[in-house]
Image (cartoon, rainbow, N blue to C red):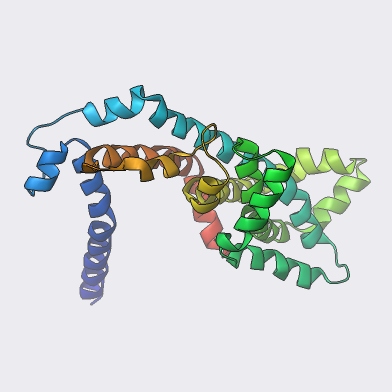
Length: 270
């Protein structure tokens, strides 16, 4: 009796998978073609298979430096975001203080605000203090959005840990740093993994701030990809290869935190 319902769910899942994976497949397919083949013919597989597009990206400093720059500032941002968010989330989880709910809501409004709103203040501030075109500039700018997100995720995981564990650790003679690192942090490692993933993802794909606050030395790959337009037209093949390579770091991060993300969904914080 449940067989028709099962079949409908299976068909819906297959349709969703096709809808989600076709654009990715097509981008990978284009990355192994020439521009002429992309513009002239519609083929499901490359007729003239070539690695030239990837060779261009991996040998041209103007291209591969963008990946290095992006990984640097995304890594810095993820580490700082977690370092700041962990004690903040613990405070929201364990203590009640004046205006705590209002402050928590205010943090989330930063995540809801478009990056363009903060573009001019960041630009003027970094120009004044000499941080323009540095990896630290982009990493600090992305803290405005990633720290609230990390606090919100981690607070949910921490609230699921009984307070009795804290009290028992203090009775056993643990200092707060010792308790937090040795006992509490391992209990919320799933939350740390989820928060790290989302901080990485949002910082990796953000374009407006990263493009505006950098020019040469710290230019991210997302900004470099916009330079494929020239007088001769769009370099679709190289752009497709660059887009394919941008998926790789995110896919690697997802592989390591996949179980933690599933737990985050189960707890209702993701």
